[in-house]
Image 1 (spheres, rainbow, N blue to C red):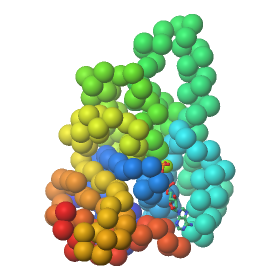
Image 2 (image 1 turned 60 degrees about the vertical axis):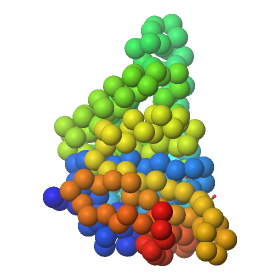
Image 3 (image 1 turned 180 degrees about the vertical axis):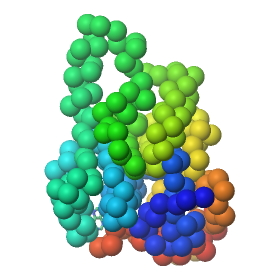
Image 4 (image 1 turned 30 degrees about the vertical axis):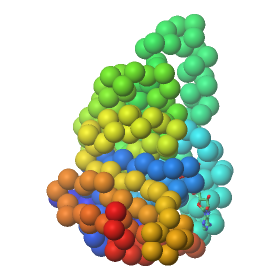
Amino acid sequence: MERVKTGISVLDHITGGFPASRTMLLTGDAGSGKTIFGLHFAKNSCDQGLKTAYITTEEDAHDLNTQGNSFNWNLEKFQENGLLNFIELAGARAKVTEAAMSIDIGTMKGNFAKILQNIPEDIEVIILDSLGSYTAKLTPYEFRDRFDLLVYELKKRDITALVILDSATSHEFNELALFSVYGAINLMKRENPYTGRRERVMDIVKMRSTKTPTQFMTYEINSNGIEILSSSEPK
Ligand SMILES: Nc1ncnc2c1ncn2[C@@H]1O[C@H](COP(=O)(O)OP(=O)(O)OP(=O)(O)O)[C@@H](O)[C@H]1O
Ligand SMILES: [Mg+2]
């Protein structure tokens, strides 16, 4: 299976990278590094010459560029040469809601696949940060239905995708999303039972067609972005 490197070297070494034309799910607590992971992947997919869209619902492009600059990734360069598109959905979402109120809020509500209508045809990699903003008031059935449709549309368009769900999204929705995607990674902070110190750990929950470690991998966020330190911590 073709792979797209994430740029997170240990992860690429272990898995070979994200499966091409498939959707990966990234979940994790507030401040666990989901956005930095997403930017790290975006930076690396641009380095591989892949046309990348970073869809952001919470932070604007300016803040994301600032975050990227803190790792010396110079994401502006990729935007100038057309490899990277930041697509801000916050504005679009507000507009949709306004217009929808007078039309039919029901048809707009949580139709995730509609997000893809804002994406240029030739995009090869998408990071969606985060879908959590679109899940409010959906029933679990509606969520599953719409999430499946999004994953289906992404695959049909041959897009390698990283979909981020934040912890504000219910546990139940996280569980449902897990079944639809090709792979999933969860980021956590926890106390190391041996040292008593808090640390960041990454769990590759699943990755089809790929041999994955069953252990948590400790990682840190440093001047290189996300860096995995070890894979020896018991779950
Ligand atoms: N340049 C940097 N060097 C080291 N650590 C950093 C740097 N920039 C941010 N961090 C750390 O990363 C954390 C935030 O990471 P990030 O924004 O990716 O989290 P998140 O999971 O997306 O959070 P949220 O749920 O709020 O969206 C910060 O709280 C900080 O601890
Ligand atoms: Mg974030």
